[in-house]
Length: 321
Ligand code: ADP
Ligand code: MG
Image (cartoon, rainbow, N blue to C red; front, side, top):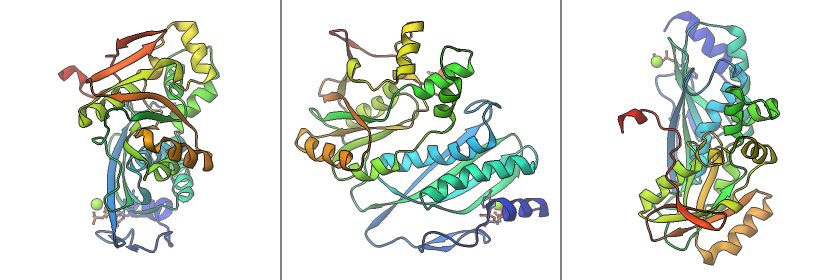
């Protein structure tokens, strides 16, 4: 490793003290060392952001630092895991001190909020590509999966749908909205870590909505070999998203646009009251949007009519299908 790379790590990424006592060795050796507490399962996920694919040059470095960690934490949240540590692989076209400072500010603000430690990574030169790998802990045997939904379970969603999609529309020229607010949703997603932890003992299946509700709920349906019906009237839509729909007629946007990073989860009717009580107690926002059915496929009830909903969200390499 060249000196410049070491200086970058030392200046922008090395912290002397770690939040978590299970980190026995962090940045500085060939590997980090973590002790896993007894009766816990290590939960691991990786996500990459590539310039031009996942973000445009309009996105600030601080936004990127936040978003890279947020999208990874969202995966931990969807399994009900408590975040512990993260590694960071950066491919940078050049060493730009201002960019690195802003990026690490955005990254560490969120990392410190959840007391997560950066324990290693890799720094290389090339086209701007940002990868994080997160490590979380979940009590043994209870992690929330995609494959455990069953008929009659209720389908819940956190937060709002389509806010990030509206942000993307704003970057593509849609102007009849508050661009600042729309872009904030796109660039600063809030991972639903607290909700993931709160629903752990009540929810059955769970997924985070990164590629659009229809696409991600479909992953639950396929893994669990079930179907679902969603009630259009119950979808949580912000005023700006409703205004976008009435201006453009594009009502499918909130169902197919990605990047909202809300959690979609299923709950048995017997646990509904307990689940709603725990979410209410922690002041966590949720909506009941539909129901799991034995009949396969995704259906939408809209204006009194039930129809199949086959619109796709975003998929890389979708031309291969
Ligand atoms: P090696 O050559 O043995 O793979 P490196 O020289 O790439 O190790 O990295 C030196 C140390 O710095 C390692 O502990 C590595 O995990 C850490 N590191 C490298 N890049 C980053 C980064 N972007 N963020 C955090 N830690 C990093
Ligand atoms: Mg290396």
